[in-house]
Image 1 (tube, rainbow, N blue to C red):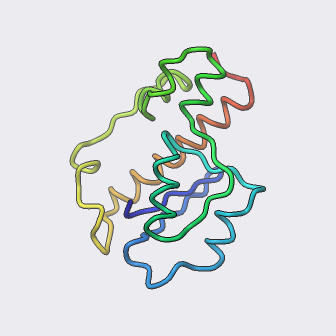
Image 2 (tube, rainbow, N blue to C red):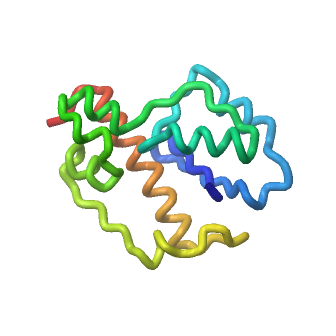
Length: 138
């Protein structure tokens, strides 16, 4: 994991873990604050990597696939990626350009396309969970 993608509403932050000389204490405090819930598809893997590689503790997490499974009663959603969840929950198709998804995310400077992709990815996770917890889904 080279980048940390955070989104709340229309505000997104992309933090390049690999090139940070040290982890800001404010980021550590934010991630381990139990008042906030961090979400992702298979978030357990990300949380393990954050702890193992950067000693970053994440206090409160929710797996988007597990949440979708609970809300829709469909076990197959547990293993569905963001693209499939977007289709199911938002009724929209996510087009992921391989030229961006397969690009070098370990570079010190991300391209504008990479930053945009990372922000969209984080925003979609936020949006999907917002809809799932509101109960306003099909």
